Image (cartoon, rainbow, N blue to C red; front, side):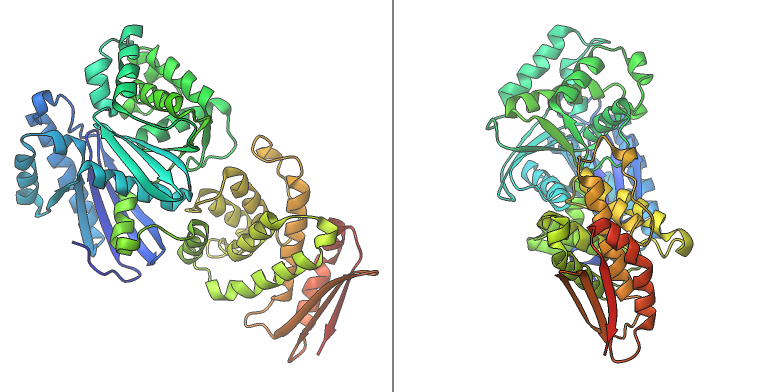
Length: 502
């Protein structure tokens, strides 16, 4: 049952999966944002050895232990509601009722066993609200089931669920160590026979711990400069190499492979082969790793109810990151307005398009997120928070650019060289322009509350003319602008003239 939440309320989600039991504690920030307070994971392997659709006694005891501990951790946070969701292992188990009753007796919690459609929709919500994808496929591989969801114009158009999760696929198809070529072929055939897709249907987004683990291995192999996993794009060739490498190695060899999680060392080959086959069937050239899925989708359903899909993922995540880091959203908007005005006035000099204006406005909203950590190193902290925070709907290239803009907004020359494999050719020049514009906008709004009532900016034969006026002296703002003048002139390659007026 959904309860009405207020900002600050905590939602606890305990995901009882075939491979693991996972806890998520999330605090509502607004109707369009939440922040993660805590997470915990237990290797319960509830679906392991599930012969003839029956949960084994050892598996049930591992699951019960995990839920008891998760419940104890969640209770300490005082959640407004606790959601316990069971997936494939409980769906297919004839003795699932015994397990559910044992959970109720030992913890007082009621387990809701999700149908395949309910699980698919919750995973879709978690991914759509953190990626903003419009068309293509989502693939969610857990321990027990594989969900393949087709997205059309931002709506879940079709969902399929089959028992090809990493545990079940390993136990049924991959018996060797390493698996034989025949075993791998049989698993690939099972995927082709049980899943229907439309080739060439656009983006492919991957959900779940196994997908994140594959992304982590790929990131390490490429020496990828950004640590962020959410939004990481792995090529079709990269996934195929991983599937061949993992399936061709023994358990001990995989254990020594950088990035392979110890709790997935035996089941990751099956997950990699399944994902690789789905990519082959869809014709997807890349797989985008989603950091959010089922648990976050259940949180969104609790927060937003029927209208759980966010209308604007970028705007919602920017607002959420501001709120999570103590930024006054309303106070940031005057800086956004001035930055936009300067951008438009100097368009003839910088020649940048609308996508750069959007990045400038986002950076203006996020420029203050590092101040609550440390005033003196606020710019570096702001960059780190952009890189690592819950900023969704942006590509990794855009994340790097935003991080650079907020870091060098006040002074200095942006350095994108550590991210050469992510950025593009003209990005350094463009970021230099935007940092200069944002520095000038911040100077105009030097004080809060600001006495500035009007700002004019236009390009004339003399260069860029800036005029600032207010109901009282704006000497502080003019002084701050003068400090930004040379940087602005260098970025725009025209003289900049600053004047105050009443």
